Amino acid sequence: EEAASKATTTFAMTRWLTVAVVLVSARGLMSPVAVRRCRVSMMSSPMDRIGLAGAVSAASIAAAAVNSEIQSDAGMLSAPETRKSWVATTTGGNATTRLDAETGLPLSYDKDLIERYWRSQGSALGKRWGEFLRLSVPFLLRVATLLVQGGPEALAAKDRSLAQEVREICQELGPTFVKLCQTLSVRPDVLPKAALEELAVLQDSVQPFDSAIAKKQIEKELGRPVEEIFSEISDEPVAAASLAQVYKATLRKDGRVVAVKVQRPNVLERVSQDLYVLRRAAEIYQRLNDRFAPQQKTSYVDLLNEWAVGFYSELDFVNEVKNQREIRAMLRDMPNVYVPDVVDDLCTARLAVTEWIDGVKLSDCSQEEIKRLTPYAQEAFLTQLLKTGILHADPHPGNLLKMRDPRDPRGELALLDFGLVARISKEDREKMVSAVVHLANKDFEKLVDDFVDLEVLPPDTSRKTVIPLMDKALSPYLAGGGAQKFQQRVMENYGMSDEPTVGGFQAMTQDAITVLNDVPFSIPPYFALVGRAIVTLEGIALTGSPDYALIQEAYPFVSRTLLRGDSPRLRDSLRDALYSSKNTGGSSSSPSSSSSSSSKKLDVKRLVALLASATTELH
Image 1 (cartoon, rainbow, N blue to C red):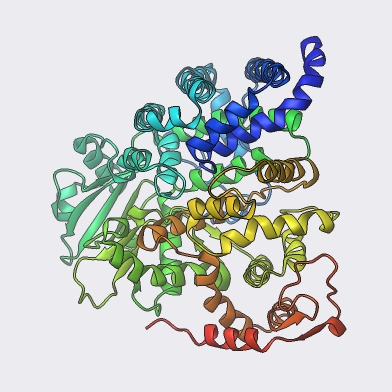
Image 2 (image 1 turned 30 degrees about the horizontal axis):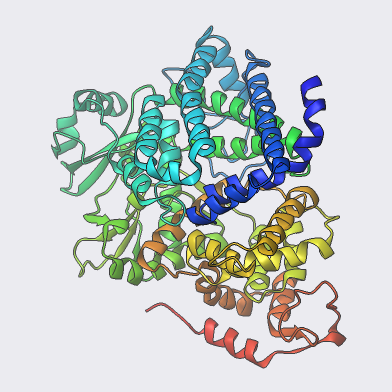
């Protein structure tokens, strides 16, 4: 504390410039040449060198704080806690929870029962936490050292070896961490190509477990020999994933070809244990965030809690096939999208038998094929998210298959794996529709209200502060192209597209400070589910169309929803879509623009665009 007190003045002068240069360059917002120039300019005077020394001291203080948080309460590991969750489970919020016959662990997430189990296991949790630190801390120190010594160029030079190290660490840590890598591996606009290629190894190429063990598991679950159930079954798995592996088989009773999904041994215990570890990591990050950026109100512990419930629910295959039946019925009439049937009498908590789909991963198709099929995947996703409220929340590339036979009467695109499904209330769906309408029309004043309703911003948000920042941050995203083109447009807005200018850099730094200090935004827990699905689908779409614009592509569906909706909120959203401010000529992005009817007029162009969008149907 004494060292922190002495460094306060220097830290205050240098932290934002240092953080801006490091973080902006690390995220690819500045070219390596621009970063070098900024670095040289920072060292151009004795005072600057003193400031940089202060920043290094501040970094030392931050490192000490991290170490202190890791050491504190080292034995206080607890399971993630849940209150309200969007995850669809078999218990549906009821008191009765099914238990695994072998371990006694709950099959649906139950904090108290999980904690009771691990209290009986001695020091197992502490050992797992130590293993996590042993593997992860050296990697984080390596990344930090590269950034300090050579900036983003040093990271770029090592991107393949860094990605390989992450993959190997996560493989060693097990299925929970493999799942995290799988989520990252579908973002070509965020990660470099070498990293994507390395992490993509984990999509469907996880090391399988012994097939003899898998077949014994099938017999144990169904209580009879494999040969009595299947006339044929593949000797080796056709796919291995983080939680299970799949065999191709033929049913003896009727000759149907099926996929047999068998859960990995001991995965229930390992995942429930890892959730403790991640809860501890989230608590450490939360306390550091509260200490160094107290204005930010995101509860990372709540985010982890929601993710934990979702991930744990994927271990219950009874829940998975229930979700699959429900979404199959919901999308039955969806053009070109197919959900496989379920063989109910052969499904248990650890075994799922479903209709076989002969296809190839959508992400492995040609760019033209991905671009052609993306609208069907998008329509299916929007129907789930905004119309029915039952959402497949894990649409990674292995779960979206293009049918191998283009003449297959079932359709061209198959949706698989329903272990993680979200249930979204009608009220929340209408809030999202409203937000899409206001964002698409750059009505940032109304978008603030949507963000308050969605719990992204607090009710007392200063519109005068937030609305101009929304315009700068969200307008570049609307044009499409994912994170890379978004970053380019942000730089252009600050006059820094080619050469960094002092004024542009200062303006961007000031806006960053304003966001961090004056805008108490938060990431609500539900984003752990909905955000995951959006990020994954957008990543796939960008591989087919580098200029893909999610909001603009979703607008036809939203338009149809508005014109068919009869709730007060949807009627208000329709009114907002059709009427523009007289002062702004179509946008209410100015804090001075009034929302009263006297200051609004029918925007004919918006009306035509809305009707044109609403009549855009898939064929």
